Length: 304
Image (cartoon, rainbow, N blue to C red; front, side, top):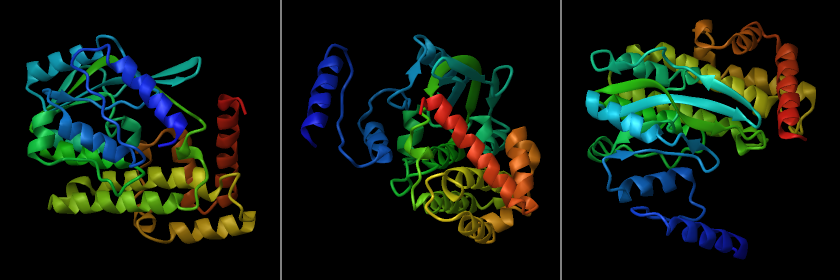
């Protein structure tokens, strides 16, 4: 820990000391999964929630979710969230009315694998501490991409009852300068590892057919991220010709090749569905143009 980190930690500790029943744990440079797992192990309450450092929760948000958890005896509780883009906000809506998943748990489990439903985010939810501890559900420390969905899917596979409430609880602040959108030479490998891990989770349930189509959508959603933030990223040092050749090679490998044979366009927004159509029909120049447009949007929102 350097001097700047130490000063920040002391300031945070000072602020936290003013709250009752709040314990600050500090884990340096081990990744978000290690920090979350230690929080789960040290927690003593009935429920556990996860929040990113730059996000915030409505003042009565946790109370609403806890009330629903106790009313429906739920292991996982999901509420609505808002995407904050500086001065712009977008409300995400999963369902129109409150819903309890007990007989139809697979419906929610499948939605976890469809990123645009929001069901796969670890934040904006409450998890029964008993569920996580007794079922030994922790974040996979080997993953540094899509770790939320992998964790939530395993938790949901152990849950007996899941409920959703249409109340706004969580504010997710989008950072257009985040590492997710930064060029990394290992970007594709990190996501492929996550996709293969989720496939292993599904196989472990011995009911692969129940989740296979949603898994294909999970793979294709992350293929779109790879196209924008890796293959056709402006900071990719390769030439346009090399990028095109590498992307063509990538989609010919697993898990992408199989998923591209089972595209379900309704699982995606219109813009993502169009991009997928271009990929399926080998219109790589169009994919490159869309990726460039997205990065121009990122620069506009980030003020760069």
